[in-house]
Image (cartoon, rainbow, N blue to C red; front, side, top):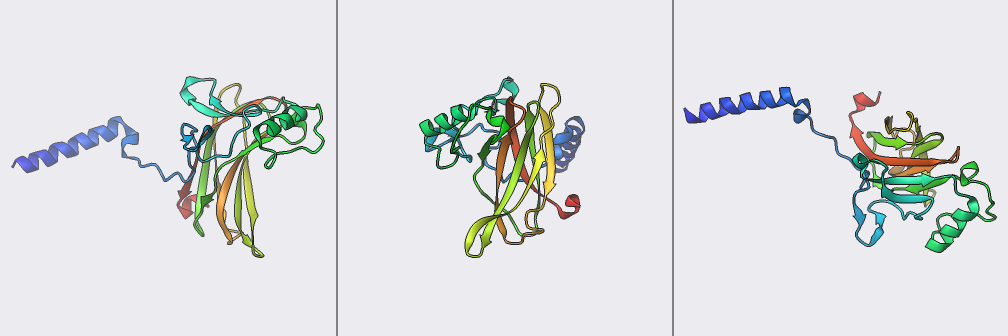
Length: 220
């Protein structure tokens, strides 16, 4: 008798919880992108976000967002000149990744822009995915997803897509897009995210990135 009463009460409580808190019954899909909220520090380098390339600390910064609700985020300042950025890349030892042969005094927004890559993520053949992220800024920015695989005996970039970032005043906007990395390039085995900001010269923010596998029906 006690067991049946317990089961009854448990069912009632569960139903009430779902009614009062609709999200209680939902399970978030797996996020294959490491540290998309930028709250984790790389164990080997405290100045670097886990799961991402090194930032230069000037044009591309890993820092506190302007509002407390977003914690740490990626900030890009494309108002800086090519000369300023080249000097910073030399100072931080990043010229093996970013380097401008003859840097000018113009804002880097007008030519190269600024970018930051995630660590690679393995993808499954035939699997569709959804990328979601928060963006803050006015003007031009993109979030790229780039696919890599072995072609002619070498690891190469074989596929890519991007999301144009849309601003809404001075606030954050959440954006999402579905992509299918192996649909047209079956040899793609892994992907990277690249954050990219360019023109007009300004400050751009990125946070809360997620890449989740989705059902095939949802990808159509």
